[in-house]
Image: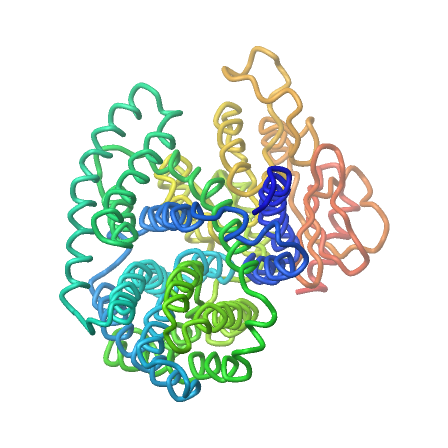
Length: 604
């Protein structure tokens, strides 16, 4: 038994490893799970203080149930029926039911053939556990790959809905194997009914509570929601083991698809803080519970099992489930290359495998190491290859810098066109219809701004955006818009035009130490309007190592690889010889403008 100091050290170490691994993944540009799994495994080897059975004891499984329920609730919040057309709904149903059944039976058969000394019931349980995928692994990969349209909706819905179904299937098999009563399909149906019934009761309760809290105490939305979700998960689990997982997903779907109140922006704090922390902690704990000796005991058969899952089972399940659907061959191929296993598989295996092993069921001790290796193998393979595969198939996002320009005036369109000619993807948020029409006529992607819509729609709109330029005439709107976008994109990726210098001009005071002012504080909207009216132009030239002359103001530099540097807060963009530079040349800069024009003609 661990001492109080050892428990304190273990809890602190788990939190540090969980958060630092996710931060390192962001810096390295890889999915967080690729780092979380080996970090937790190594921590489990290096110290006993992070082993969940010793650190949390009997608290571990209840903690996992509540944590996974919260993760699935947050995933359910993203399942808006508005984004799913009938073709996608049909495909999701076929994947979640037919595809999951085929996956279960195929993995069961492969496991039984590879591990001849294993009880057949254990093989069935491993097959059930490994049917799940899960939002904790699918959503980060989708955000990393950024596929568009129906493909994203299909993978997201499948990954979220198959999780509770697979977990409940695992419970049914576990009870059948552990009790010796055999297969009881009615038990699974009863689990589904209990989960749906508890969600049906909890949904209206949460809706009524959110109406009151949203109106009078919006800062309490997350706390109130947390209270109800935990209550729903606990009640459902107490009635039927693991029915809380389905109840949590359905509760999230109910909240996401009600139309009377918009609480999505507040509830996204689940994803930004609580859910990310829970995902990191759970993966560290599950990984730490597996020892090298246990892994060696299931090798090399586990490698063969993962290969069969990736190369045979998943492609066959997708091919049969999506045959005759509206999805193209390339889209089906991408879906076939997108089935990572996640935290629910690990949590279920750690609970069921240990229990069956204590009852002396043959092969039960191999459940957790086999499932852990399957999680690690699929996460690494899909995490490192899904993006290039998606690009090769033509279903990935742009995969480059995408600049959002907020504002539709003439010189904003010229700036957008200059960036586009330099190889930077551009999207515009434009208000007046005539400005939208002018942008479309110029070949630009333009739509109404979505800064005030619900957070889920806004997240989808901003998913590919890497940088934003806020260029409207209103200083007040620019202040609010920049603040909102900085919360979404990061403070180093949002730039606004300088506010008017008169202290009594704006109704809203901007942040006193605001950074991210495009070019410098002298280049206000009025000043830029005056310059353009006097003949100033945005021109493109090739960097030659010398600063532009005759008052030309460099605004952007684009490398041959498409990297973008933006002039801000009085600092010019970082340029190197060979970069493309976009400069503002005043009407008096005839020599610079002529040189820039010649340079542009030569490049074209």
